[in-house]
Length: 272
Image 1: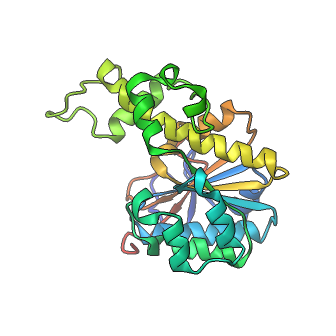
Image 2 (image 1 turned 90 degrees about the vertical axis):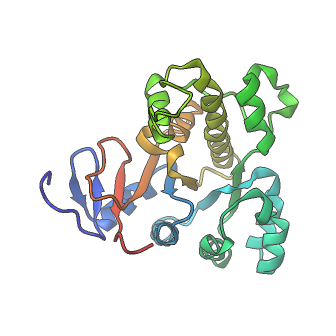
């Protein structure tokens, strides 16, 4: 497989480059505790892919809850009213504070929201209050009183590998960058802040499994929180979630790096 061209529509296992059958990928994912579907937030084709995977999972397992990075957990009552058919789309987006909590067009996500409503799949807000990210970034978890932690427990510390990943993901050693290496203490604030999101998403999904009779929880989350098992997957493991499957879209001509995900789906580069 190492020298063959990747074909759009294929699933690839990054560990060895093997092509996987679509039913095989979905059947295996449906047996997990949590499935994480990564995205680049502004790519419509990737959200369509998420929708298709979600539909395939629902065909194999009825007990599914869907968590969204885009929505803070405090708005779960709004999500519940939307799923129950009590809100128009306009009212839903207004009450979900879409224009202030998320900076990307609602049209990218509405197909996913409509799907959850049509099939009455519980929707979960995975995010925390925005100020918590800044506060922990500045002072660390010890500076935040328990009552102000928004239900989020302190994150498992970042490994050196995760720090390297975040450093490269955010620009690496660019000539004009003040942070000179992954180990630079000046990078600590960013890493702590990133981990607040990682942990918040993991806490919400672990809580949903405990509170709702252990459904399959599907997380709609930016890929930077998921790649190589860092971020949210590591935090889920720390919280005792046994099986986590990470699926990512892949549009680059290069082969996916080993370990980046359990499987990647090759996208047509013209399909944005």
